[in-house]
Image (cartoon, helix red, strand yellow):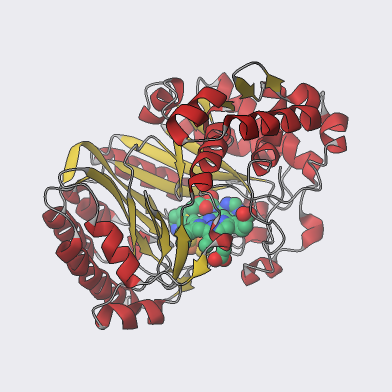
Length: 451
Ligand SMILES: C=Cc1c2[nH]c(c1C)Cc1[nH]c(c(CCC(=O)O)c1C)Cc1[nH]c(c(C)c1CCC(=O)O)Cc1[nH]c(c(C)c1C=C)C2
Ligand SMILES: C[C@H]1O[C@@H](n2cnc3c(N)ncnc32)[C@H](O)[C@@H]1O
Ligand code: SF4
């Protein structure tokens, strides 16, 4: 890599920065918002408009040691079925406050492992959702699928319910890496899952893989990517492994001294990246790849890529409603988050109240700063005119910020009269550059590596 020493001088290899799936980021949310705030904001959605809906299922059969998601292991189905009942009760509460004629631009089931739901629960939840708000014309219904926790009956149920995109967790195909991250998953199991998904006519497939895993080398990640390419996913998320054992206790099972150094992480990312590019994928934002026919690739080309709690999206709906324990919602007014603990969430729903425990009310400043960060993360460029005209930014303050960034990052940013742009060699610095637009303190948040 050509620029390693300059990147190092800029502090890239020591920096710990947010991933900016929201602005302000979740650790900045504060208490004081309640279920009533959530209900009010839902009731203020424009009748007949499109919204996005996220359902969270925080259960897994296995608890992979690398995983930073808030999820609970269970060998029996009983807690999952009980959870599904509460989720349906929460959906019924949503029905009562949701304005007339709202349709869904997106329905996403994530977790955890939503495929822990038995097939009849999948059917009844999907049926209820679409009874409350049908999928809009061209809407998408995506589900996160663990290849180790799926079978024909559950895939049939999802296909019949109208799933349009499956998202599978791969992480890495290397057997030694799998054993160190506590996630066994043979290539055959993954391939059989992919075949079973396609056999049911599900047109679009996403796969998640990771760089920066213990014992990962350029050769090993190249092998994994090549195996993945034989499955030809339409989209790939290539996430940097976030080692945050102070937050995700299970990660203490992964010895820190097995982890690649930040310089090596950069190399691992680049190795994987070149293989995707060579195979004809478009590079999307900081960590996604998509086939040119894929809607995310098209959105990126058209400057319509956005960022939300699910990472990158081509969804333009102004509202994202998150149901289930710990789910976050976004409204034009701000963010709300449900009670993180399943028991607390359930108690609240059983009492007939939305479980919102914290969130954030947008200030006018949040709006333009948030857009600047989103534009950098999505397009690697931000326009002064757009921030001023569409997001109410004060021109002088934005210009001063652009100057500050240009001064600090030198050759790795390009500043002209209207825009600040991050050229390809500056891309590893994107999250660091984004922090320059973040006016909240980074101190109380133990973020992961900037690379
Ligand atoms: C589906 C799994 C994941 C979700 N987020 C991450 C994964 C792997 C990655 C992640 N998110 C955060 C961190 C730590 C700090 C950082 O590097 O920026 C990591 C590694 C921050 C974060 N994101 C959310 C929350 C609530 C937090 C931390 C604050 C806290 O512990 O409360 C939002 C959020 N992320 C995910 C979900 C399902 C979610 C909303 C509830 C998934
Ligand atoms: C939903 C997706 O989140 C990713 N994921 C889970 N845990 C981590 C982590 N510690 N660091 C980065 N990505 C992670 C996985 O790739 C999973 O498939
Ligand atoms: S990676 Fe998926 S299956 Fe593994 S613990 Fe995390 S959510 Fe559960």
